[in-house]
Image (cartoon, rainbow, N blue to C red; front, side):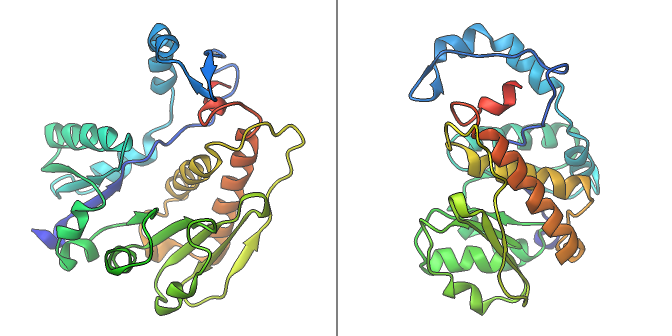
Length: 250
């Protein structure tokens, strides 16, 4: 059973929408974050926005071999999304379970290695648990602020490492290749960098789905470069708006 386990990343996958597809919501904000009273007032509109999102790549992933158990991993606010995904999967397919990254340490190596695609964004320092999670992952994304020393990546030749470098863009290392840098797309209208990393992640995962790259053997240098370039483009757009979710209203 453990060798037949799915993994899904519980991450906000914001679809890029045009003004014709969405109403332009501009909730009042405090320190860049919408007030809860405003969010509740516009709850119906936010639901309508969510209903217009393209979830076909995610649907294909979940319903491919639906008899396999699903483990949805999330941390903080995304854990509620993971729990809901596990509930829906359990109702319509097979066994579903939501876990946190720390709970993942209790899973066997056979379970982790049986994953289709394991995406890991660490906040922890480089320690035994960190390295174990990296070893079990296919894609590891981190910032140069939290992990400036990338020497730990030298022990792995079967991963995609992505290091975010803020205004310098990002650099990545695929399998045994050397580090490659992708410069950012200049945005003269930048006002707030909050959430740019989340937009990079969301767009990158979305691009992986659209290009049918949901297993690591399908990830190669040309296509992953394109996906990361698109991710940086959307991240650059996101800094034109106040707050981490500003871009989703446009």
